[in-house]
Length: 364
Image 1 (cartoon, rainbow, N blue to C red):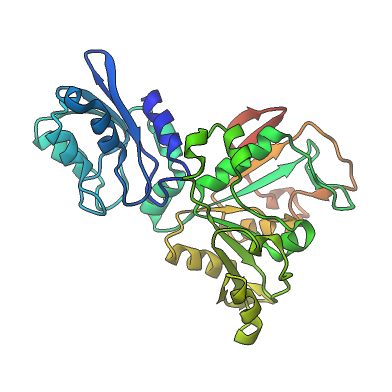
Image 2: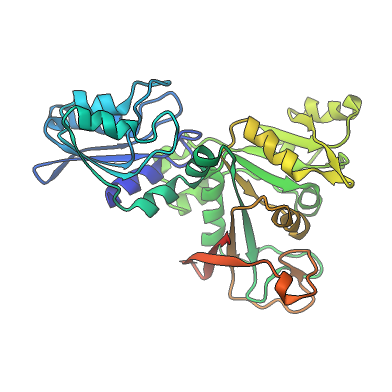
C-alpha cells in the first residue's frame, strides 16, 4: 500500500478534479504492474496497472489507495475492470465518499467472488486526497491557508521585506501544494505588495519530488484575486502568466471590468459585506465551479478574515529558525484582548522541510 501511495502522489496536479489514486498489482510475491490516475477523461490507476501487468494480472492481488469506482463516468467502472482482468483479491486504502460509489465498488467485487480487504493505511490514503474526500463528504470545498513565518511569528520586516524567510525546500513544497489545489486565492493587498505570479513552476516542482517526465502535465490551478474595488494594476504579473485568472470584485460597472477581461481574466461580481467582498460568497462561487481544494495565499488581513469567518479547514505554516523581532509584521492581523477568545487549533503533523518546519494545524 505504501507503493500504491507513492503512485497516487505522482497523480497530484495531473488528475484533478478526479482523486489521485495509485494501484499496485502483486502476483506470487512479485510486482507485475502499477499505475496512477491520468488526466481527466483518461485511464484510472487500476486500468494503468492492469495494462502494465498484461496477462500477469490474472490471479493477482490489487493494492489500491481508494475504493475502485463502480459507476460509468468518463471511463468504465474500475471494479468491473478488476473483475474482468481476473484479479482475485483487492486490498483498498479507504472507502470512496462519492455518493456514486460509497461502498458499491466493494460490493460489486464481493458479488463477483473477489476477496476484499481493507481499509489499510486509511488515514494516509485519505490525506492524499484531502480536498476530494472533504468535498464529496460535505459538498463544500476544502480550504486551507499557506503561511510562512519566523520563529517569533513574523511574516516580514516592518519595511515589508520578506524574501526569503523560509528556505528553497519549503518554497518548493508550496509549488507542490499549488499543483494539488484546484484554485489559489489571494487578495489585492498581496497583489500590490508582492506582485505574485501564483503559478506552479517546473524547477520547484522537480525539487519537491515531481518527476521531470510529469512536469509538463501538471495542470495550473485557477488563480483567484479578491479585489473589492478593482485596484489591481493591469500590468500585474498574475495577468501575464499562462492559465486562468478569476477576478472577484464588488464593482458592478462592466466598463471597469473591460480592461481586465481584455487581459484574459474573468470578472465576477460578489456581494459587498461592510465594504469588503463577502468571503462566503467567494467560496460558494468556487464551489459552483467544482473547486474541491482551495489554497489561500494571502496577507495577514485576509487570512484573519477567512479564519474569523470559519471558512478554513487547515493551516499549513512554514516556520523558519529566524527571529525577526517585535517590529516585524504579524502572522494574522487580528486583535484579541482575552485569552479565552484565542483561536484554538490542533497540531495534526509536524514535518522538517530543509532547515524549516511545516506545522499542519486543523481547526478544532
